[in-house]
Image (cartoon, rainbow, N blue to C red; front, side, top):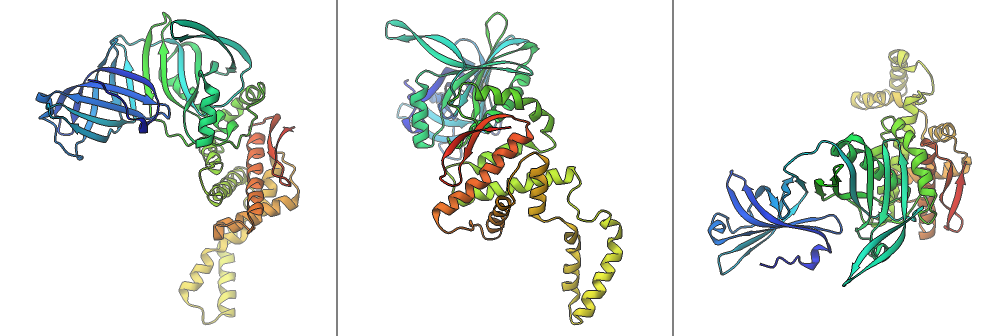
Length: 458
């Protein structure tokens, strides 16, 4: 039976066929034929065909719940689904056959013999745009002919191994489409040469670190959606399809993708400091929030709110770790005496004040010794080495207060709102670069004409 994937799901990039067993909630198990397809945005579609005898065990209902699928595909690899399976459709046929379509979260394929040591790993990456730094060639089948395709790959030497990233064939057309449509698609493959005795989960964790830094460099979410590993003999071992959560393509890049050396310089310089300050500044979440602030499919005000929340968090983490939050040192040691003085002053000034009102005022007493947002902003930017005029920092303060209290920018005209937004983005970009000890070129927005310029940070 021909199992053609409907076009609305997207373009298929991988398809596997085999036989499996569907485990229903309630421990019922029914054999079926299985087609597992991953589409270009990472989504996983699973079609199960049940013969009439087994179809009678399926309730014809949208309430049908399948807990898991397992079995083997043509070629011998075993497979098993991970995570929840969502029912997309049930199709009964007059012949008694029944087809169900499921949306999966993750599918793991393994050989019968598990190999603990792998030498090469391959990951498909979505939404990564780059110009490589090393010439490469591949051989493509076009009809009855084999043709050479020359291109540039990106080679990265990292603390844990070597990564070579290759654009997929017709990458330019794919990128043009997802830019225009704000879409998601596989644009490249990362080949990872890991040290001896590396295992698959460890390599996945390292690759996800790299994806976070690549995401930061491009201002858009870059994820892996499928992975393969090969043993020293070149045999395929684990394969994983993963429906990764990925936002649509955005183009507010930090590091210029058009320069073949900038991405290499950025990754190799900042990687050690990312690991060093990862926990101190909760960098994994901070990078995600930075991407949220740059997500072009969201309202400008929504992005602005994400930006000011990130600035608040980063400067508060810095202030707490450097003990900069208090104006007067030792204030907390005398807070009870100060509370009594303040209580007496308030009650003598406002003799009719209610006890509830008085307590609410006294509860805010610690805020009297808390530095203002603007002063903390000045301390933070100065400490990390940013030289920003006080007038710009005051403008950031005004934008932050307006967004935090009224969910709108201070300006009313569109051009003014955009300028306020990019003032926040410039600060966030430069703060990340300084925190990660980067020196080199990056993309800065000129607030006068809103042009994007390649600028050197020293």
